[in-house]
Figure 1 (tube, one colour):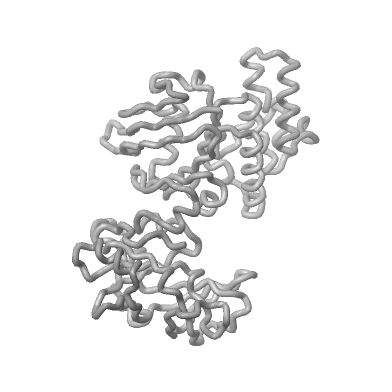
Figure 2 (tube, one colour):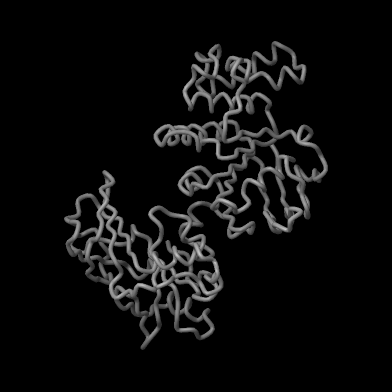
Amino acid sequence: MAELTLDGVSKRYEDGTVAVDDLSLEIGDGELMIFVGPSGCGKTTALRMIAGLEEISDGELRIDGEVVNDRPPKDRDIAMVFQNYALYPHMTARQNMSFGLRQAKVDKAEIERKVKEAAETLGLTEYLDRKPVHLSGGQRQRVAMGRAIVRDPKAFLMDEPLSNLDAKLRTEMRTELARIQSELGTTTVYVTHDQIEAMTLGDRVAVLRKGLLQQVATPRELYEGPENLFVASFMGSPAINLMKATVEDERLRLPVGEVPLDRRLRDALSRTQGSTDVLVGLRPEHLFDATRADGPERGVTFTCDVDVLEAMGAEYYAYSALPDAPDDTDVTPASASGEGEQEAVGRRRGQQLIARLSIDSEVREHEQIELSFDPGRLHLFDAETGKRLTDPVR
């Protein structure tokens, strides 16, 4: 096991592209750290720099306090699990798992012991003599993980190892991976673009965007106290509802109603330097069917038309147009202007409301529904910078 330290690490390519910009991060001994973000955010590049597969342009990478910038991958004592299984098709699972140890001239009895222990941990004992073609996708991924485990490295690096699996198997493997990492206690850095995977797996999650670290925190801290609008939007499924709001006559005016300013909201608005325009976030699960008793006692209530209703089995996702929202409503912060794709998403998000409702709700598609929410659940963001203004929602 090892402590990994990224101290101002950057990666610049010859054409001037900056893939990772001044990344500083402490990854504790035995911690499972998740790198998450959209495609092109630099998460895989950061992982490859830790592995030694990419040169570091600036900054220092330390493993247990030793600078390893110039140390080749084979001398870093780190094992990597890739998105594709990278198994030798002519070898059995046993031979694939033991390949690295055999190349290192490890004693045969020691190899057998390590492969046996890893197979028991991964549930592969009965499949050790099968070749990859006769294994399922989940079993192949376990073999790839077993090949890393038998090396007993200081750290595991995993680059979207579950993305090639179907949805059901991916969920099962996610649970298995969490169990295995907990049992082994090996420091692990795990890259994914799937925020659900990030929230359910990680001890802590590092959210990246365009090579910059946006926030690093526990999954709960990210969800309840996102540092900025990007983190709030990226973490959570369905995504957070975003609305433009103004402050008038000691009240916060939203497209869905007016909210009296309590102490929390006043404190948040005092950080806007006098601006009366803010962006408001409200999680879909914090909207309730007002006709049912499970909603907030003193909530704000409003009526809207349900345009689309998705039955998810245990719950409904109800999609509505925000009342009185013009077609050009945009919740993209001014600081992000010029990013065409983000502006388009911002316009859609600024016109739509998503409610996550109990399956017992009487909600019907193309009919009106009365919804309510607790003002204490609102997140406020600066309309110019996108930074969070409110204290975390508990």
